[in-house]
Amino acid sequence: MKSLKDMGKDELTQLKAELEKSFEDAKGKGLKLDMSRGKPSVSQLDMVMDIMDTLNSSSKLLTEGGVDCRNYGVLDGIPEAKKLMADIMEVSPDQVIVNGNASLNIMYDTVARSMTHGVLGSTPWAKLDKVKFLCPVPGYDRHFAITELFGIEMINVPMTVNGPDMDMVEELVTKDESIKGIWCVPKYSNPQGITYSDETVKRFARLKPAAKDFRIFWDNAYAIHHLYDNDQATLLDIIGECEKAGNPDMVYEFASTSKVSFAGSGISAVAASKANLDYIRKFMTIQTIGHDKINQLRHVRYFKDINGVMAHMKRHADIMRPKFEAVIKVLENELGGLEIGSWLAPKGGYFISFEAMNGCAKDIIAKCKEAGIVMTNAGATYPYGKDPFDSNIRIAPSFPTPDEMQQAAVLFTLCVKLVSVNKLLK
Ligand code: PLP
Image (cartoon, rainbow, N blue to C red):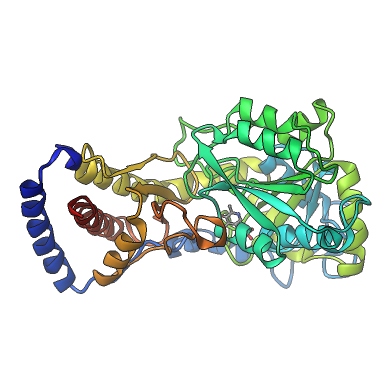
């Protein structure tokens, strides 16, 4: 297809008229489609319903070591749940603490604890004049919401196909002691679906931060969320790499089964060095007598081991893959060669990230809304909800059916074309 940028004014004006007509026709259909929700579809949740039958009133609710899961005790997770979460994160069970249902909760607590009590004996961040975090962009809005809530200044770091721009990360953390952390989604990132290269992980591990209490927040939320059997991303073990590089305490890794079992009732975990885990446990003892061990047991009895989890994830992939492929196909067919947008075709995760022409994202999303498609707000993938280029749009293909997704994607590309033509005519 001819690039819109090579079209003259008359050609663009004619195209605009055609697109406006198609848009009015589409609007007339009164569609209601949602591409904003990064949550499992009902069929994915239905697929795992029998997890509810793994335990019942006749079940023996004892761990392998004989602990009664109905009672108090076991602060940091039953051993078999630690093993399961360790295998998902590709670390060892003694590097893991199992928590409640949400890894976001652990991330929030980790920032909150650093604010009030510091990191392994450092000055509490709340007592410092300035605390800053690096935020690879586009990124996950709920990460940014946590640091914003605590008044932590966020600095955008652009993503590349290999992960965050490491030249920038190295330079900033080396020279600025007020930079205390970085948010990372290292595998099938939200929203681009990028996996950090081995070189990127090694450069992270070798960082020499000015702040001794600098921490990498390694949110491995999509560790096992592959779309393809024969084309799976691999990620180096950051904890092991940090240890090798002489920085054993520099990272916290997070994960959960939110998009494996039930999004609202999974189990979550944090992995880190012994020093970090001991410090976390010190605070956990005050916070709780223990998390929901029955749910931990339910997960272990249902999945059995990592092989059970991986087999289950293949069934998720069978549901997710057609939706991702439907969107990518529409983007290629409708926008290929027009030079008004770019995207990557993720091999896993939950999102597709679309880069519109600068200054177009808000208008595209508004047009989509007019036509009955709900998209994630423009700017949501940037700290403070401010995309400096007004160009990034996050597409969440998981919730609608493949057919709805296809229709929504066609309408989306129509809105992209219309807004881009208007922009070029200005
Ligand atoms: N981390 C990332 C990168 C996510 O995309 C999400 C959910 O979309 C979460 C964490 C939420 O995880 P949890 O349900 O374990 O709190």
